[in-house]
Image 1 (cartoon, rainbow, N blue to C red):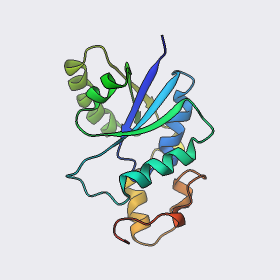
Image 2: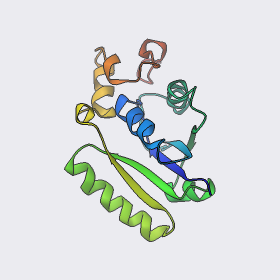
Image 3: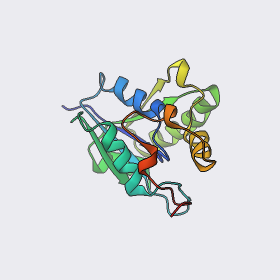
Image 4: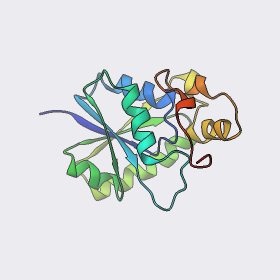
Length: 161
């Protein structure tokens, strides 16, 4: 049976930390679905399609990574896609507490789906999408925090359109 994991997030924008977690997880899973959350209540900097395009560029040569989007409960998305694992990256103790609570709720809602946590490498522990997005919004150079395949100059944020 294929080991399939879902790596959910807003990915606004996708960072080198996200990329590193997925690349490391490929040794554990046959397929990883990067699931971009579509939340109408949240104001994103990059459109849903732009975020998906960025991620596809990063993994264009990796057929075991698929990019999709979803709304609603993550565990329902997992069930619809036949994924038995939820993949999450942890940077800090605060991340662990937050993710543990979500993982326990998910386990209660979908007992057959396991949450797998991977620790970020130390050099990525300070990187998060909120900080990277703030750098971009302020006109700074955030290129060192996003994968090399993503040229931020190619994309306009919703604030710029």
